[in-house]
Length: 131
Image (tube, rainbow, N blue to C red; front, side):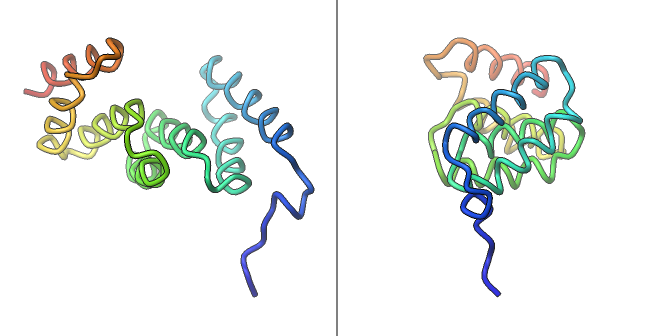
């Protein structure tokens, strides 16, 4: 038996997926990660090619203390969009959570040169905290 394409089975289009993302993001903004988590788990099943959904799910796993699950999501997101710096930054944080300090520092040292100041400043703070 083949894999079910849930998006086709439910007859959902991009608009319905975006509506679900908006709801999930609203819960994230409220800090209700336990509610947002299953929404983004569903989105990752419904839209397997979305780096955003995979990255967001990874960030939720990281926030809820599941770094191993986060790592898998970040890996998937980076396969879809290898240069997405927010994903790379979250990957560095996850390495630190897992005690993989050397890998976290290596990635943070690359990201400290990022033109986006939010990314570079956070990377610099990680370097200071873990050096």
